[in-house]
Structures are given as C-alpha cells and as structure tokens.
Amino acid sequence: MKEKFLQSRIEVQEHTFQQIGKELHDNVGQLLSTSRMLLGLTERKMTDVPDTLITANATLGKAIDELRSLSKCLDKEWLEQFSFVENIKTEVARINIGQTVHTSFSFSDHIPLSPDEQIVLFRIVQEAVQNAIKHANPQNIVIDAAIHDSTFRVSVKDDGTGSDSLKPGKGQGLVNMNHRAALLGGTISWDSAPDRGTLVNISIPVNKNIYENNDWHSG
Image (cartoon, rainbow, N blue to C red; front, side):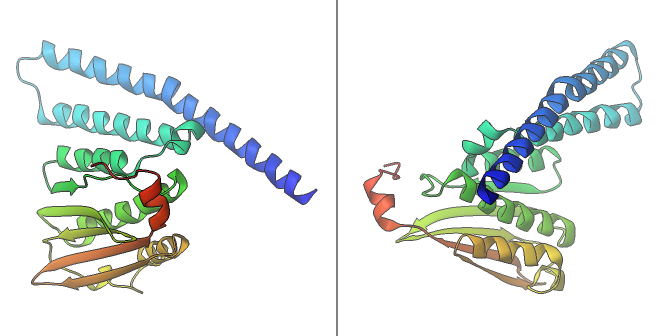
C-alpha cells in the first residue's frame, strides 16, 4: 500500500512538473519572445540606440534561453533521455556568450551512465563551473572528461585566483557536490591555490563489463 501511495505521489508530481514546463515554454516564453521582438523593432527605428536598450535586449535573450532550459528540466521525456555531453556543451555555449570567461569542453566517447546518473554528474560539474566564475574570477575554464579503465573521470580547471571557499567544508555548494558524487559511488577532490587556480577532479566508477559489452565506445 505504501509503495502504491508513493508511486501515486510521484505520478502527480511528474504531471505537475510537465504542466509547469508547458506553461513556461508556451505562455511565458511566448510573452518574452514577443517583448524581445518589439524591442528589436524599436531599435531598428532609432538612429542612435542607447546602450541601456541594447543591454535590455541582450538580457531578455538570456532570460529566454534560461527559461527554455528550465522548461526542459521539468519534462519527463527530456529527463529520461538526458545527455551529460550535450548539456555541458549547452552550458559552455551559454557562458561563452557573455564573453567574460572562455570555457571549453572535450570528450570523444559515450558515457556509460544512466540518464539519472548523468543528471547528477551534470549538476556536480555545473556547480564547479559556477563556483569558479563566482569566486575565482577566471579568464579560462577547461572541462575534460575521459574513461580510464573502469572509472569515468571529469576535471574542471580554471586559471582564477583560487579561494578557500572552493575547498571542501567551506560552503553548502561543495557539500552538495560531495553528496552527489557519493550518490554515484564516486569521489571528488579540490586543489586550489592563488598561483595556479582551482582543479576539481571527479571520479565515478563504471561497470567495465557493461562498458565493453554494450559498445559504449565511439571508436
């Protein structure tokens, strides 16, 4: 009985999330897109466009992108097909649009993790990147991912100032990263110093037999 009750709650929650996602995408997103179009028309009619209007248009564009990402996160089908690689690429592109920090990502293989596990891993990397931008003032962030034997490794390296706030035990964000790595049966470590920036290493064990027998390799 308890399991059926829990399943009912999950189904109701999923339905609610889907409805919210649909409303965000179809209604709020459409209103924002229309507003941005009107701003664009106004800009084209002006001979001297003020910087505030240009900034407002660009900010609205970023808000629309964020809203689209949020609506996707609330979609069950999207979550069931979640791709760590594709979402990291999207995150990198979003950061690079700002032209303040240059971020790169390299990985040429397939990830032997379920969509749920890839979501957890993505949140860890996303937190590491946001911590670097928020606390270390870097010019460059490099994200590398690779399979070594039966371990999937991801590193996030920045050339920022380094910070005690980026070390374990210094903030709730890092506690959450540790917790998420533990959920995947993995570990996470930090190396941060003013003269060399910060390096975050994430190691997630994978089933080597599954990795080999299910043709996870790209080559």
